[in-house]
Length: 193
Length: 277
Image (cartoon, rainbow over the protein chains, first blue to last red):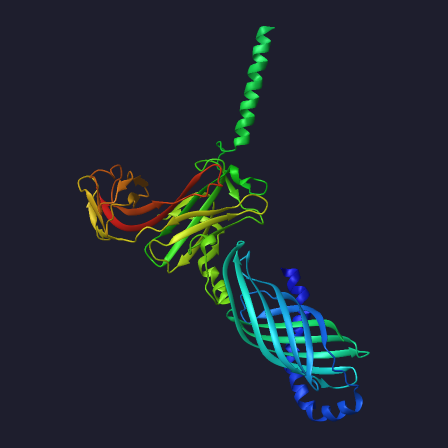
C-alpha cells in the first residue's frame, strides 16, 4: 500500500493546482476568446481516450487509491461537448485496519466547454451527473454494497498534437460517493476522430 | 539373535511413537515462548478471555500456545500474524447499508488489533505472553469475535463469546471487619441468574506481610455464597481480604485451533474487607 501511495502522490499533487487553474481560467477568460479565434485551427470532432491516475477521499481514514478509466465526447455546438467518463478506483484501504477497503467506480455524463488558449493548448471545464457504485470489504468478506447518483465537475488541460492526438491532465470532483467526496487526478491520452 | 530382533523392533516402535507425538504437536512443552512463524495453526491452542469489571471498559485478552493450553509454549506472534477482536460479531455477518466510507471508517471502534502485554486477574499477574485490547461502551450480551490471522498458515477467524450480564456485590460492605476464625462471610450479588456459573476468590494480605489465595469451586449462580468461618485460617493479626466474584460464560472456540483451548467471558467484581483473628 505504501508504494501505491507513493506512485499516486505526484498525481495527487495536481489536485492542489485545481483552484489555481480555475482562477487563471477565470482571469484569462475575456482575452481568451479573441486570441483563440485568431490563432486556433478549430477541431470539433468526436474524441475518445483513456486515463489513469490517483484519487483521494474527503475521509481521512483511507489511503489514496489508483484509478483508470475511459472517456469519450461529442461536440454539440461550437466548442460545447457532451462527455462521458467511466472511472474505476482501485481501492481505498483503511489506514488503521488491514484487509479493510472500499472499492468504487463511477460513470459520468457532463456538459463541457473547451476554451482554446493557443493552437495546441486548451482548458475544458465540465459539469454533470455521475452514477456510482461502491463495495466495502473486511477480511475478504463483503460488508456492504451501495450505489447512487450525484453531481460531478471536472477541469481538463488539453494538449492537442496535429489536431488528432489528445493529451490531457484532468482533475475531477465526485460528490458524495457513498458518504464521501472523491477527488480524482489523472493524465490521459486520446484521439480526435 | 531373537532378543536382538525384539529389541530392534521395540526400538522402532518407540521411534515411531516419538515421531507421532512430535507430529501431533499438542504435548507438554513448558512455559517458554516460540515465534509463530512456521508454526501451523493445527498445532496451536488458545486461551482467550473477555472481561468486564463493571465499568464501561471491556478487556479482551488472549494467549496462543503451541501445544496444550495448560502448558504449551506461549506463542509470540511474528510479523504478518495478528489477533483481532470484534464487538460487532462474526466478520462474515457485518453488513452496512449505505455510507460505506463512513461506516467502514468506524470499524476500528468495533474491531481492534490485540497488542502484546500482560494479564492480571483480580490484580494478580499471569505468566506468559498475552495479547490484549479494550472496548468501551459495550453492553451485556454483546458478542465478541476474536480472530487469529496468519500470514502463511490457516486463519482461525471465529472464536466467539457473549459477555454475561452485569451485577453488583451487595454484601459484605467494603471495609467490613470479620473474624477469620468465627465469622462466616456472606457474599451476595444482584441480580442473580441461575443460568450462569460463578467462581469466588479471596486474596489475603496481612500487615505482617503474609499473603495467600483461596478459590471456591464453580457454583450455580443463586445470587449469594457463604464463605465458611475458618476458611482464611492460618494467618495472624490484621489482614485485608479482597473478595473476587466472577460470573462467566463459555464461548465457541474456532475449530482451526488443532490443540483446542478455551474462550470465556467474565464479569469480575471485587470488594475489600478487613479481618482479625
